[in-house]
Image (cartoon, rainbow, N blue to C red; front, side):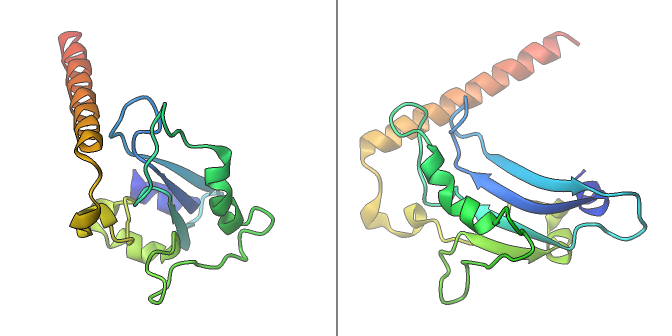
Length: 162
């Protein structure tokens, strides 16, 4: 499916959203932006711009929900007036830059053409002195476990209908 998307459309942008901003905590979500192209023997996607609003960002549905203001940097980087005039915020000098370009070839070389690309170092894994409080960790663990149980219950219900 991902290969087909890269071949038949101009998949130009991916917005990696923080986990848990929708109904189920722990669920990863991306917004993909693509233009449909007429049939052609040539691959339509040449490069994909990715904005990582997931790594080192934490939102919750109730206590700290994502707002329009949280998307302003993405909108600026996306440059809707002329998406062909974009500039990366990531560089070797700025490894925490959230806006980065990848060639279609780089993506096609990934295992199963995975679009789950990340490059920003997750500070929660690297900086043990700045771990969230035990209460926050417990809440995250409970949310993830509840989400997993709900997913298994949905799967069980679907299997039961077969």
